[in-house]
Amino acid sequence: MPPKLETVEVEFIAPRHLAGGGDPAWITVPLHRACGWSYGHDPLMPRVILSSPDQKALLRLEPNPHGQWWTLHHAPERDRRAWYASFGAWTPVEILAGFTDALTDPAATPAATDPYEPLKRAGWTPTSYPDGLLSPDGTAMVQHVESEGTGHWVATATLPSRPVWQARFGEHTPTRLIAAFTTALADPIPLPRTGSLLSTPTRNPNLVTRTHEEVPVVQVASALEERVHALAARRADPPARPSTLRRPPTNNGRSR
Image 1 (tube, helix red, strand yellow):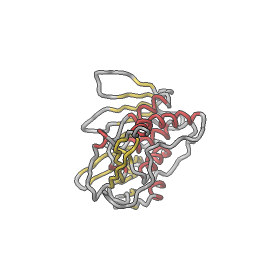
Image 2 (cartoon, helix red, strand yellow; image 1 turned 60 degrees about the horizontal axis):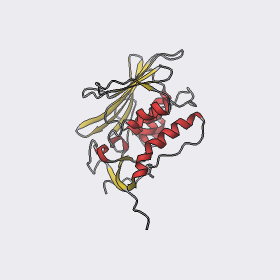
Image 3 (cartoon, helix red, strand yellow; image 1 turned 90 degrees about the vertical axis):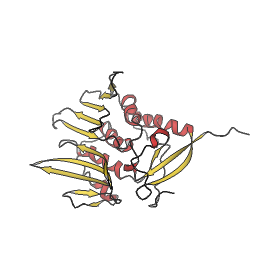
Image 4 (cartoon, helix red, strand yellow; image 1 turned 180 degrees about the horizontal axis):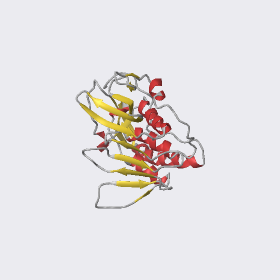
């Protein structure tokens, strides 16, 4: 009789923008191992600083109770002024990965893209605020804010009583990167959380759907390695393997 397969309970949460921050390694490890970003080492400081191979981009992850935890600064280029993007602690790393994966994609084209398009296709609707779109469940909003001839983008997730996280994109941030972020934000596929990553902003069954599955431990453990492999393979352009923890979209029901 074959040995029993060891499993772990995984909780899949939708909508994904209320799934909690997740494991920062989902961002930092692929940037270093698959994309060649370098890091400094300061054991006395609770932060991570990664710089791109061309030294034009600097990503800082620093616990900050009064501000954004993730901040990316990009130096000016011949056709673009310096820009920045920042993300709150509760921003799911899978959504943030849409942005960083697009930034490091060697096959990306510089063509401008409308960040609203992925949201419109997912059923987001205009808000009472100028030039903004609201998620179908009413707990997330993306807005292009214009003031005195300049404009920046803001994405916000909220609960009825408080904000959860905010992502900010400076005026000169390439719109294709913001569109990659909104594409990940609008994705209906629930996000997996397990163990210590089950810290979520809410477990209210009226706001989130939580489903549980017993998943092989080896499958959970290999998800990050598969992500690193897929991003590294972009340089050779073979088809990327999907993450083993992706599931089909659930229905619109709530906690089961």
